[in-house]
Length: 194
Image (tube, rainbow, N blue to C red):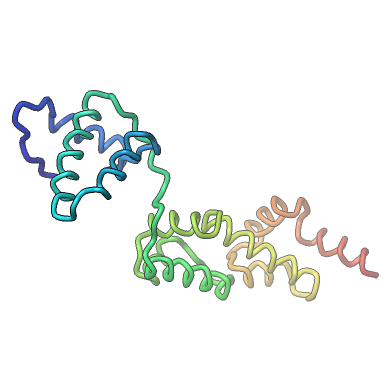
């Protein structure tokens, strides 16, 4: 990152860098009188003066940050996604639903839809309210429950049908989800519907 020098200022480049690095390169500020006043004033200026005003206010903001007069919020994700990014997340969601039997990882999904794994995790959580992993696991368990109720397939066959290579791993997750092992779940369901 490059900074221009500001004569007679107390700005120190290493202070700025350390503040930015402490927050992952982002600084978000709570809505306050300072920010409200900034945008109100910006709108009142002629268009040709807005750039200079923003530069001066940026210097002021950096000065306040370096003197610990402002306290940024922690970065908890983007607030804006462009149409292509949203579409990539939607396609990932739909792909998961139609490929529950396949081994799916964040990396493989990110490669398939040409987005970063970090972006996929963050965007999916913001759009669908849960992590990709929890969503995938819940959908697999829903399908497994349905297969246990409607078919005579073995637990191993159902495990494979919902993307698990091992029946024991599948059974552990199923039991955690439904509070019963798959075979017992099937027996109880059959008793209720006799």
